[in-house]
Image 1 (cartoon, rainbow, N blue to C red):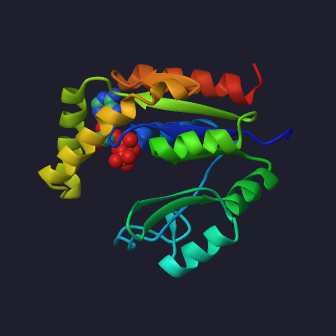
Image 2 (tube, rainbow, N blue to C red):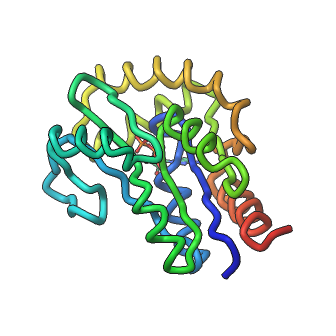
Length: 193
Ligand SMILES: Nc1ncnc2c1ncn2[C@@H]1O[C@H](COP(=O)(O)OP(=O)(O)OP(=O)(O)O)[C@@H](O)[C@H]1O
């Protein structure tokens, strides 16, 4: 493989990042999911090293001081998320391209770190009504509460205004069409067209 590339999938909560990530990972064997670090507690169904690297606050802060993160954020006091440079190089070394599923701020930061070999895609649901419906449906399975959803919707309004900073805006209305378009864009990018 030539130089490793990076696909950055960003968008508000519920916009479809996980859904599109799974689609792309199953379609392109040359893509590998980048596992992020977090200081939040591990949930029952999660696996360390697969869903996230679960770190203590001390360990996370020590890695920040050693400049080991390509990007990191403190979302709430002591709740950190970040992408390790080592994770990125490990994937490129294994001759794969990287797929990152990341929030909007993180996506913008990562694009700035790797401007020449990355493609940043903003997944947009421009109807707050539709986004609300999706978050409600998902919360039924996840036991999220309504307050949590309202916080996410308010954040989504703000995040949508950053879409123009991305290389591509992918409107996720009809899922079949969105997947088709995502495959098309990513195929062109990794196959160098
Ligand atoms: N085009 C679509 N039409 C209908 N439902 C959709 C569509 N795209 C995604 N969904 C559904 O919307 C919900 C949110 O999607 P998903 O979990 O992929 O979002 P996300 O951006 O990864 O959210 P988060 O950042 O909170 O993890 C899921 O239940 C998913 O099945």
